Length: 449
Image (cartoon, rainbow, N blue to C red; front, top):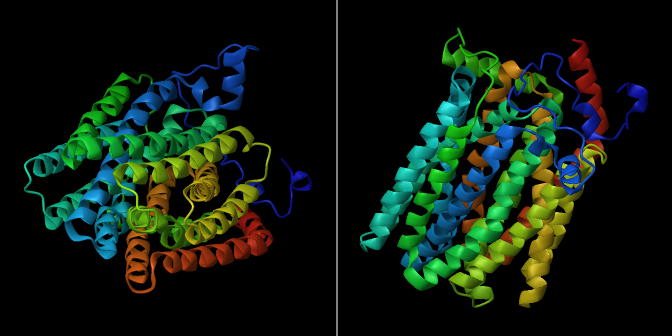
């Protein structure tokens, strides 16, 4: 597409094709044109045209449902032990803090070794940690420090697992289907937010938190089997990096900083990570103190937010090639912020569900679009390192947001803490819209250089 065909204010037009993109999925030939229902589904969700993605999808769904079961059960367990909003935020921070320090090294490993082998290792490690936490909870010997240490170890695993998973998508789908695959991967996360918390609420009420952790451990078998079933995977573009890992990290950071679009996305995702996403850790507090809900009610809050997120990711998958991505990014975050502010002012449960649905819709539509944009822009030689930087900021900055919102909630109230984050997110979105034209100009200069 030439410059005359572009919209000056559209962020999507900055995400131009990378000429040296060479990864192809040898095991996923384009199916024959089908005008029936299945053909319409493949047109709407083209990632499913790839055989390996069809194998990946169900295993990841089961595993993510288990992950959300554990997240809800862990937050509820901490609240039962300490009755402290700050402790809930602190434990949530422990699970993401390692990402801040280890993700860049994880990106070098992802660029150097086969991504499926890395994922098999990380999924197995996470499964073992879930079983250990389940055993402690079942035997009644669990303490806050045990939860904190196991959460920290899981964060170390995720520092390698998350960039590997993001980069792995480019090996199991064709390039033209990458935006759809990223949106559907986000949909997996958010479908799990609907199903997992509901199951968690039932399990906690019926059997206690220990069984919930064990169920999560069992769920990892699904994703491990799906990874083992894949065939015809492409080899990494550069399976060996000759330079020292620290130099490789430096090169990845230099590339990201000099790339105007990637630099802008990283800054914006930092704002979302600190000031927007942290509201999730306060849902146990809101459920218990604002609405008088138990564990099952908490599951409903997570589920409604997740349902909105599913709708958002489906729309991104269907319309990402039609609607400018700036609409999804800036519009989604503004919608999220306004809806979440409304949520903090209501004590009527149906109204709260409506606002949570809208907030989930807006936030995840924006985040999945940001991820798709950066994936479609990055040079394959730096894919693992750039995605590790992206996930380091996204997940590694969450502890800052979790601690910040926990502190403000403890001293000024949860509603005020959430509203402060929403106002900052709206401001960042307006700055993004205002600067989109200058970012695009800088990107073209970068390409010419």
